[in-house]
Image (cartoon, rainbow, N blue to C red):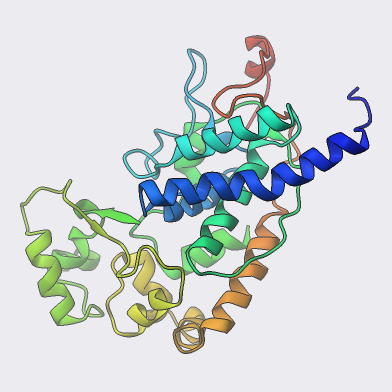
Length: 296
């Protein structure tokens, strides 16, 4: 059992939690502006698979295929090294005290704030998963072609690759035609970036303002310029259209709803056994037999 924390140690922890994650994220965003958005994406992709438990960060082992190479994550998620850097800084200040799961959430919060978005208090105390599952990630993570019905049901329980949008440009709903909800001029722009039969590994920005956290995303949807089907459907689907319209007009409403959603999502955890990892990429010297007996 860990001994009670002395007052001096508590002060050190408080200062470390206040300063170190923000400092690391700020440096990362200076080095690479997209690091902020990448940190936010890590948060969502970790949460979807058994709640926030840091399972996304675990590297593959001889007996475990983790989530990093799942269909929604491979060649898509980035900035794992930023989380590593935050973890190392906190381990140096307060060893085995702050979980990787908590660090993912704090990093996303700081990325939002440093990009001009709202601030909120992050509840701490989560444990890190002892294992991860590529199959679990493949089974639950939404794809770029998901519709709003699927996405809203999933919640109840920014760079793109051309292959993610080519069907919208040339074969929406197996019609052999482009998505009629897409703005024609926007479609022409994308045709030039992602021509039929062209290189599907070509990349482009998911957002016109990738370095700023604001409501531009929703204004884009209202104008028929959502990039992925899973974006534009939030406007074309009647159940979510009203939210897109309100958020496109009022950034403050969007910020309030965003913070409320982040706080609620922060409470999602699997209830499975966990620990506070010393290294974000591997468990703490747990015997393989123990890992093999844990079901995801």
